[in-house]
Structure formats: structure tokens, C-alpha cells
Length: 180
Image (tube, rainbow, N blue to C red; front, top):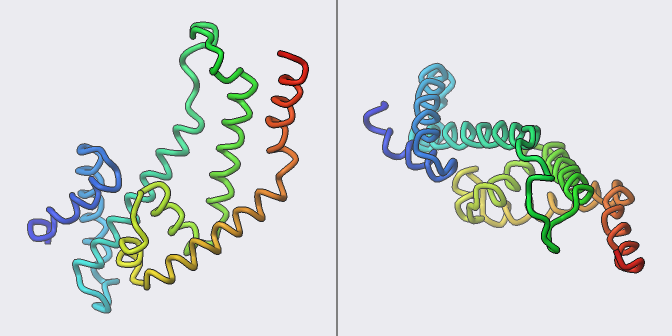
């Protein structure tokens, strides 16, 4: 199984993760998981497709964990050590932007799985609708529909939180009027 499918699975992992060592580790995890789940394989899809789906899900999980770790990683460089430039965001703007990023990630994580997967595959993995459709075993039109619904759900969630998101814009407007 490994010898026959390793080139495909490694290529998929490399494409989704972008790092050779990480892709190699992920591919090994995919084969381990596939071996442990062989009794679950129904034969509804080609074995190769089943492995491809396991690989994709494993890589999505790895990327999610990596993104969460990056979001909470401590800042190692102090702001005072950096040269101040006119276009650099203020510390307050950086905090608000980081908070906004965490909120968006939480909103994406709160989407139902079928919508969340489409958003992650499209925006984070940079897959086309056609590639996503093949991966998920659905029609490209269904991918388009799911993406549209996911965007609407995210817009609705965003509007519920709008006062907090407008804070940065409000502060910038005040600063520009007061000449800061």
C-alpha cells in the first residue's frame, strides 16, 4: 500500500503544507491512519480517493493546529526594538488587528463542517473550486454554493460583532481629525 501510493500522498501533503519535512511526516501519519482504518473502507470510492481524502483531512488538521499555535505564540521582539516608520501600525492597532484575526478564525471554526472545509481549502490551501469538488466528491457548483453560504454566515457573524470591529476605524478617524 505504501509503496504504491506514497508518491501521490506525499505530493498531496507537500502541496497542502508547503514544507517537505512536514509533508513527509504527514504522509507517514496518513498511512498509519489508513492502516488502522482499513476495516472502515467501504469500497464506495477508489482506494486511491479514500487515501487522498485521509491525506487532505490530515493536512487540514495540521494547518489548523499550526495556525492556532501561531496565533498564540508569544511575540519575541519588543516593539521598542523596531524602527518606527510612518506606515507601521501602532501597538494598539497591532493588538486590535490580532484580536480581529482571532475573531475571524473563531468564526470560521464555528461554521458547520461542510462550509468550514470549503473555506479552508479555498482560502488557506488555495485550491480551485474544481479541485475542492474532486477532493470532497461533490460538484463544482456545490462548492460555489457552499462558499456563498459560508460567506453569508461569516458576514452575519461579523455584523453581530461589528461594534468591536469598528473600534480601530473609529480611532484612526479620531487621530486623523486631531492631527495625530
